Image 1 (cartoon, protein in one colour):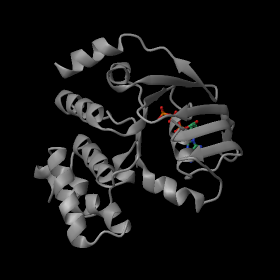
Image 2 (cartoon, helix red, strand yellow):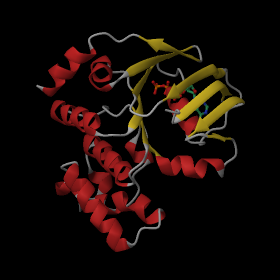
Image 3 (cartoon, helix red, strand yellow):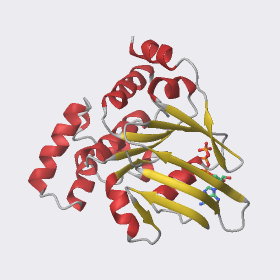
Image 4 (cartoon, helix red, strand yellow):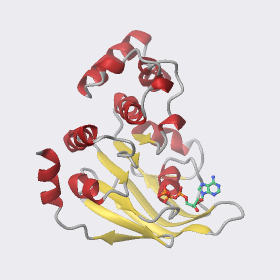
Length: 231
Ligand SMILES: Nc1ncnc2c1ncn2[C@@H]1O[C@H](COP(=O)(O)OP(=O)(O)OP(=O)(O)O)[C@@H](O)[C@H]1O
């Protein structure tokens, strides 16, 4: 099966700073839940942003959904098909209520208000978040905001999920729910996480980002971690 993302020879540095990515490469295949690990500041969030065209590499190629993407319009389809959950939910939630935040992307996709409302209700119900439907978004707790960002992204039925440290601010119960939820999803995903237990629970493969390069990482005891989290 052809990869969903195939990234080769990526070089990226922010203006006036040292290079963050140096010949980084990897591929994401259907069915994979690919975890990315690396020290603070290694460039993990930067890598995710390059995948959806929010940042442009100085060198290298990004092939997404079978096509090379270079210019801004090339990424419109990528952003529609790859659901990005940012590290900080406040970067993603800006509507007065949860229902409006979850509906926002759907309305942008051209759904009618009625269609969007139905999908919002179904999605919140599926994620057991219906009780948050009419809450004021900016008054939610950190963990609640994180689940709402996930709902907003899943509502759009993306082909791939890009999750940047999704377990931040989650209590144990919500954490376990997130693990079950991700294991039940059919989508391939790239998950940036500092949490080895979480990576072992959900990941099918891990990559370590160090000094700008990605390398396969052997994370042992995946199955044990999964059983532990689900119990
Ligand atoms: N907008 C920006 N302008 C300049 N430098 C930036 C910018 N965003 C990130 N950086 C720098 O680029 C490097 C990589 O940042 P990035 O956020 O990608 O790292 P990360 O691996 O996701 O880190 P963490 O694990 O702490 O979230 C860091 O040194 C960071 O300070």
